Image (cartoon, rainbow, N blue to C red; front, side):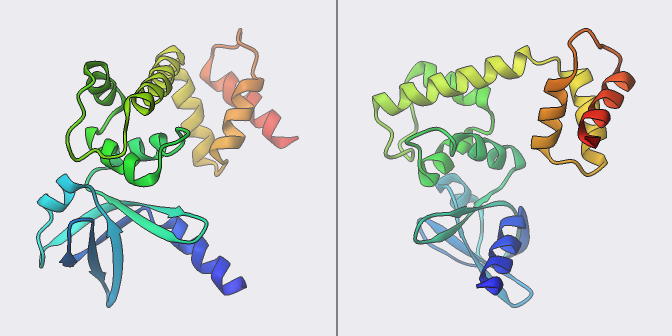
Length: 196
C-alpha cells in the first residue's frame, strides 16, 4: 500500500513530460521517455498536431477517478491551467474539460460560450451545461479582475519562494488588514500569521 501511495504521489507531481510519440489513435498517444511509455489522453486538435516519431513536450495532469488513473496531456501551459479550472465545475468531467481547454484562456472560452457556438469536437455539453460553465467562468473572470494583482502577486510570489503552499498563502493574505498597502509590510504581516 505504501508503494502505491508513493507511486501515486510521484504521478501526481508529473506536470510536464517530454518524449517521443510512439503511438496515437483518436483519443490518446503513447509517449516514450527513457524506456517508459506514458499513455496520454489528448484533445482532437492536439492529436492532429503530434506526429509519430517526433519528440514533443506536454504539460500533464493526472486525474484520479474512483476506478482509474488517467493522464491528460496538453501542448501549452495555458491549456493545462484552463483544464484545471474547468475540472472543478460541477458536472464537467475530465474529457469535456480537456476538449474545452483548447481555447487556452477563460476569456476566449467565455467569448465562445457567449456566442453559443462550440466546435464539433466538444462532445457531451448540452445547453444547461453550457450555461453552468458560462456562469462559473464569468464569476472567476470577475474575481480575477477584482483582485489587486500587482501587490498581491508580489507578496504571493515572495511567500511562495519561501516554500509556503498556495492554501497557506491565501489564508495569510486574507488575514492582512486592507489598510496595509506596502508590499514589505504585507509580507511581514503574512509571515507573522504563518509563524503562529
